[in-house]
Length: 446
Ligand SMILES: [Mg+2]
Picture 1 (tube, protein in one colour):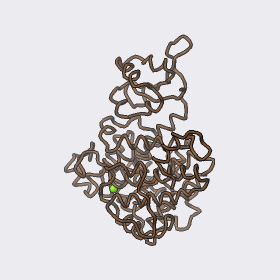
Picture 2 (tube, rainbow, N blue to C red):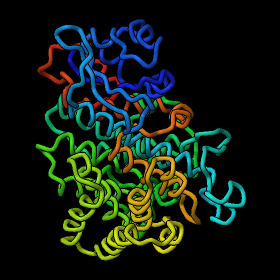
Picture 3 (cartoon, protein in one colour):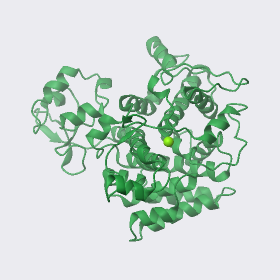
Picture 4 (cartoon, rainbow, N blue to C red):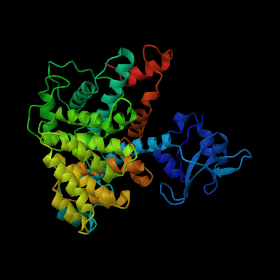
């Protein structure tokens, strides 16, 4: 038990983050006992072999250090293990996207002027009610989770059968999502409704699903066939962040160009216009590059190189380049966002999100900025949240948002699965029957 687990002194933050302590074999009573006296290093945890990331201000950068026990059982500052920083990025990426989605949900169909009138001059600054609850996610997060499921099922399938198709499993997962929306899959497709995600009844709820996605899935001829439409709506780009994470986790198999291609192909299942899927490839590749240690600006620059080799890349290239340029301009952020568009279409949603992440100085500011505009607030909030979480982890997510975003515990779990899967001892050669059964029940590889 040597893994570093990132913790905060704030008890409420620990509870809310549901960080993977239990998965790391830490008895709960030890964890609870060690949290009685915030302000001192919880020695029991250190004795247990954990290293801690400690921040007296919660999930902030300031005042943070890492500690473990030395040979004399004294707490000492230690280094930082990349593996667990990356886990925080995975969780931050999916959870940040969900929070951004929930943040934008109440104002998705409102003009900026109406948002300011209702919520004040800074725009919306906290969760508000949408779909009958506070913190409700929408189709953006639903489809992001089904993208993740498709990837994990593809991995499990490969482990047991030796052959797999990420794209095919993503297409299959989108059909399951389609059924959660109350529709029947096309007759020619043999869609199985099983696995962990399908069982989450909260997902069986309509949250303004995109018409393009619904009609493309209704007309799907195979799990890998490109959509026969000319849509470049943002319904493709908003859901592909997990592809960046997955491909980076398997970077021996997937180059950043491969990641771009899978991100584009996954969007193309529903969005047939080149900008609709190239913006998605670009987004997945940006997430991959961030995990690889790039800043957002440098990730964008290298993705612009990839884009430049694609046919019909001009719209996407221009918007990303403009977002970077505007981030260096002193004009007010709402003006820059207006200049970039409204985000209903793919390249605008990505560009607005990139601009906001480059411009915001905190996650709180990002949330308000990325959704308080005339356009598709939940999608720009979701993409911006994905990017922020991939860059900085979940350290500056306010606790009350983490606690109140719908499905927080499930999103955290699935993000951890997306980080852990290459280490699962599963497959035809594995003797670990229990784990094989768990994997095949959770992510049936069919
Ligand atoms: Mg939505």
